[in-house]
Amino acid sequence: MTLSDQTLKPSDQAGAAPAGQPFIRALGVGKVYGTKDEDVIALEDINLHIDQGELVVIVGPSGCGKSTFMRILAGLTPATSGELWLKGEQVTGSRHDVGVVFQSAVLFPWRTVLENVMLPIDVQKRGRKQNLKRVKDLLALVGLSDFENRYPAELSGGMQQRVGIARALAHDPAILLMDEPFGALDAMTRDHMNVELQRLWATSHKTILFITHSIPEAVFLADRVIVMTPRPGRIAEIMDIDLPRERTLDMMSSPEFGDYVRRIRHHFGSTGELD
Image (tube, rainbow, N blue to C red):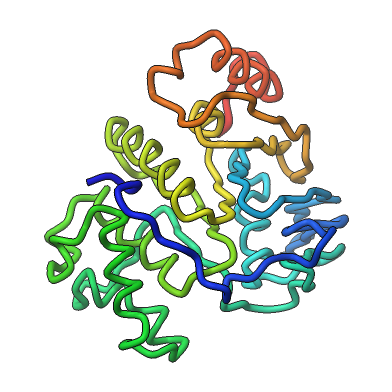
């Protein structure tokens, strides 16, 4: 079963930006970390907007502030300067309408797959009975209906990440933030997960902000790619990816795909190194 075999309709609680306003808007966002020896500028003057339903990918070298920006958007870290708005509301602290998927699924080993996906429902006291069908629909969406009573140790790495994605969607968030979610997977599993994520996005109609070091992964997934500079992290370019949907792995060998990859790689010097 693929992620697109069932349709999961978003509820009204996911919300939308007021008419005429971007779903996400960053205005001069900066972040400085104070250390014992000196201040470290992680982000500087980030200005961007993301429309509802977009799949936007941030790509850049290690330490450029990609994850910091995601944490600010999730309300987990305050910005030092500037403003960040989500659905017409300024982000000033932690929010319940954001779903996050990290590189490691971080599943509780003593909870079954179903109980792990139920975690946001329990934490936010949304009511297990009212949300059980949604959770089961999510497990069907990610192809894990037959594994709801299994434990994380019984799953492959790719399956654990599917649980993490389902858990991040369980409370019907307005946006799904994904911080290198497939970085620890082998190449074949990663390719498969990218295809499946594209289908999940098309099915769930969620806004997704995805972070990666992989330029081909960014081009394959994105409506737009935000290219970051080395620290202090600034936006070097925001690139529209004009490739047809639904994208296939075979498309990655096309001249058009290669042109986008080369254009992004150009920002990182002749070697194209991001790390």
